[in-house]
Length: 276
Image 1 (cartoon, helix red, strand yellow):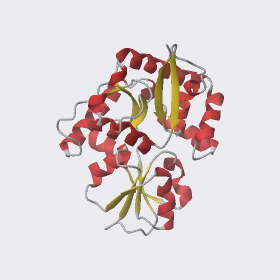
Image 2 (tube, helix red, strand yellow):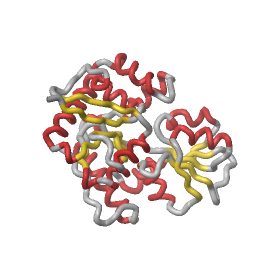
Image 3 (cartoon, one colour):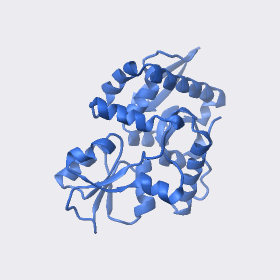
Image 4 (tube, one colour):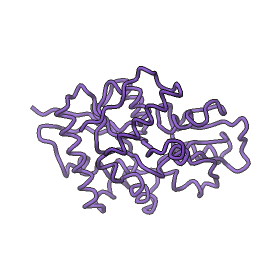
């Protein structure tokens, strides 16, 4: 019998690059049918917490929230140095009592803002793609920008207030774990491992066939500039995407410990378990 896995990923270039070979059935899992949904990262977070998806790309903030129910897969993470969200503003915006936009309650970007700017301003959650337009229009003062916004904010007449990734790295000395691929424990370790191996092969396939992967990336991306798309992949698809490794595991531990210490997750929250 064929088993179906319901998989949620974001339409961002790093995900569509990594999953291209599985999305387009260049690679297949014997006896497994993959049913994909591509949607905003915060919708993935919310729907995972609500019990949807067998495998999903989650913000590590959301993964901490549901750590008891999942395995972190060794492939597919967005984690590294110089990859963090940016705190942006329109020149002249109020920074004393600001209206702050964040890209979703369970995003790691929101967690970073809470870690480093707790109590500062009135925070509103919205879809990440609305943040820069709203800053430009003056309906908010500060915005925590992610994804392609890291490369295009200057074109929108905005200024950099703080690189939250640099803040994280300077205060912790760890790589920044933004998001990763999670599998529900109810799948069982053999199925989760089989999928993790297939995802690793898909990443290798995309690296060997970048032009084919580029077609899938362009079909789903918010920003269609080839320079932006490939800059995104070069930054977010790195050695830790193929295999988290010791530095990646240490980064997850640091995030968990700091969030617990600051009271942003429960002290009883278990550590994230990396499937090896």
